[in-house]
Amino acid sequence: MTASKPILLALDADTRRTGWAVFEDYAVAQSGVITFGATRAGTAQQRIECLIAALDEVAARFRPAEVALSSPSGLRWEVPALALLESELAAWARRSGLPLTAYPVAQIRREVAQHPRAPAPALAFAVMTALDMVGTAKSTHEWEAIAAGAYHLSRTGAAAG
Image (tube, rainbow, N blue to C red; front, top):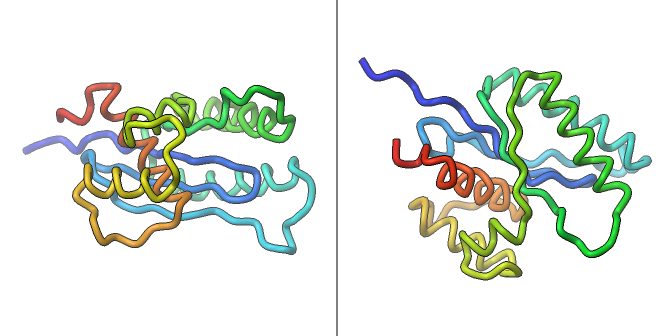
């Protein structure tokens, strides 16, 4: 009997829309987007609190062993809302007992789509091709999260199984 592989939760986090993907046995099991509609258009802190609550639900449902994050870090200027988001995600992961590995989005795009500033359609196509998902409909945020998860698995050697 073969043991099940650890579940990975991959995130493309933002203060307005966050893509997530769950990898099980090194394949995308499910993905989605956490959004904040007009009624949740409050401050960055309020949106992040809603995001954390939604991530608690995703984590309870799928029980991941670790988290990979596509981080917008590497910008040449400080963006307070994004710094707060990264800090709160790190705190959430610690409270949840989940190791979190963050990768700059440019690093993921360079590896997956062969260019650090590859446009979203190019990244989506590269991911579709690499993971045999051509024709699968996903949002840009889901493809970003899937790319982060695939990149993490390739870096950790887990993709080899």
